[in-house]
Length: 414
Length: 82
Image (cartoon, rainbow over all chains, first blue to last red; front, side, top):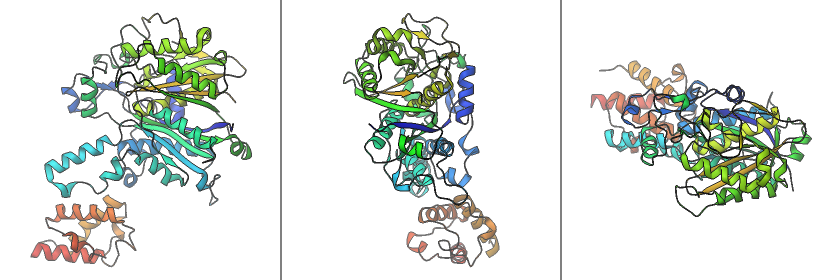
């Protein structure tokens, strides 16, 4: 089977405006969770969130930014960083180092252009139909971030937007791997984006009793596997990876971060919002990813868990990991970077895959912060940065979403 | 009543805000599409912003006749005086 390499990364997250600063912050154990400095937050039960460290309007040209929903702005920032990092971009009047027709995009979102939708609905109600922006549809449609990255880099193979709630980002990576293995593209820019820190999604997640209410101590609110956890912290941001066939990457002597070796996608068919208590679908997703990657459980040294800091989900995933890896689960260094970034919904899988790839590349696992009183999972969770051994390494990144979606991606050092 | 130059200046600011065209390039003889590269959706935005700014109605049937900045300024002048 064609091997797929990661040859570029980008991120704009609650802890950093690009991938290097995000990675540094994760290793330092720095939280991106803060009080929401807006009047609308005061009426909500949860008044904290993990907003991006650098506002996308400070980075993008003004005219470009005003034609994009915030989710599209974030996606473009991360997508262009990954694209530049890959070294594939056209420079000095030369062509890009991949044919347009062989270049694709899979940029996911969980919620889509909700801020544009709601602000235009306000304009409609307050000022009438002629005040609705003619750009509202191209801004709010869920495929807008993918299409805009495609426009910016000249992608003329498939341009896609997988949607599976909080598993969306990983599903985009899985789709990108498939596109390359099926011969539909040589290079695919994959990732996820989300910009849902807005009163309506905040109120709605609050009504589901899904959000942490630790408003008086924001940095301590996201605490996966800690007995004091009381829900997730909503985050925003985007992350992107450039996936490239081995042949294409070798031919141009590309820098390679890791191999995206396999993916597993399953569904629970259990409940629209509750996880299967023993994570059967999650177990099967990890098993499928290992099988597709031709990887044994004993090779896996690290898992970046979905672990969102909800009472049920964290334990179900721990059970699923033990069932998927068997005795080998004890050798895995587990972490949840959501303890610092909050939960980026449709961008979570992408951001955490960037973290997983960098953990393999730099051979160090970022810590899980706030784990003061851990649940007895029997698993080894890193609470300080943990060095990984020399030699070949493999890791998994898990993402699960409302709807019962489970997506695991297997990465291998190169 | 606003002068031609005042209307042109305000319209130039709108075109700058919507399409990022330098305001000093928005002169009476310039075509929105051919010279200023204002696409059809941006033109709708310019029209809506101009209606609000100048307190006039610019019917959709009229917009296709507003090929140049001068056409638009003249229409706004007539509408304000009408």
